[in-house]
Image 1: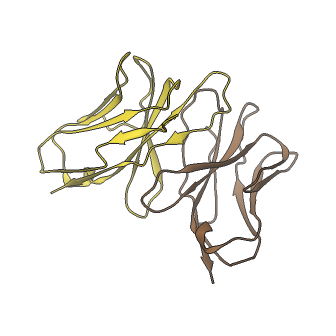
Image 2 (image 1 turned 180 degrees about the vertical axis):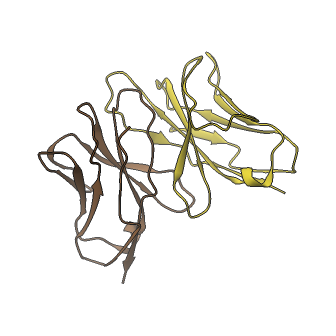
Length: 110
Length: 115
């Protein structure tokens, strides 16, 4: 299983764009990159998943370079409610265990 | 379509007692994962089960912990002879496996407090 490295914490202000980068140097060919968001006292929630290049949905964008050794979650115009822990996971989505790293604690300030 | 249901949401046990945590996956999902989370820490993988089979239990402590996912009924995480260090939030997640995207759907967790 590919190990991931993320910043422990980040601060931002409302309305700014936030980019959280995850390193996964030993990502395997079959591995996908998935990001989850967790609010206090709640279970994590799926944000976005990708394999290569760029993926965008109504919540975020995910940028993956050609070598796939890293990925960047981009949150446009964050609000206070985006304060949460963000986890990057790398693994084969077809049935393997999913190992979470320590995540990035994002604090959005007014 | 109900999401992943976990119960109880809160459980208090005294040292030496048993704790049973239940997880009903989303309808149609046959893969269940259990995670443990200590306060201010990340999620620690415990076990991955498919119906009637334990696929990966590499994150489970060797003693006192067991998990099952029977053909009928919810998945159960069982902790025998609980100790204070077992106090944590236990999250269950399910996925459809097979041709799905690998997205995990999490329950709201069961918070175990050992006195």
